[in-house]
Length: 181
View 1 (spheres, helix red, strand yellow):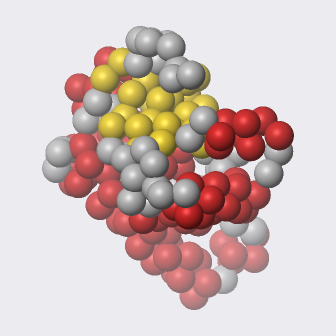
View 2 (tube, rainbow, N blue to C red):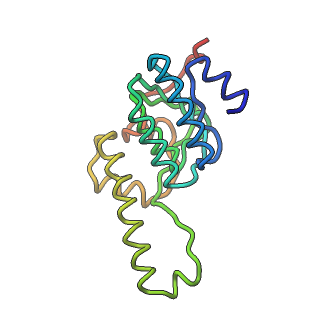
């Protein structure tokens, strides 16, 4: 764990900044384990990420969901792609005045060999549909919107302002105070 991350952790704060990847999963896992062993205090989760790995994002979502303390998220900059899913694991979700939220259907890298092999392509599509449906389920439950509304928003693939994200149920409000000391 980097010194900056350790300093935040001392303040009961986890930072999800940058790419969502395996290194980020390990950091979150270790941080939450340490917090759990210290009595599961309420935590602040600061998010500023363009997203990253779908599998890693879902792992972080699960880790946060399992953590018994109250989780408050603050989006600074952006919570795009899988970062917007991680955001949904928190009990209270806020964005700073100029933050944005971006949701879209998942993307996977395919090779020409994948595209040429009809059986393999069918398996990839089936797997992607399963994963996308997991994400729809997470967001539908948290936002209060129905599945069709969620699918429509994901297909648009356009950033939302904080106000738009609040009205759609992706955020609970605007964070307009300093971070806790």
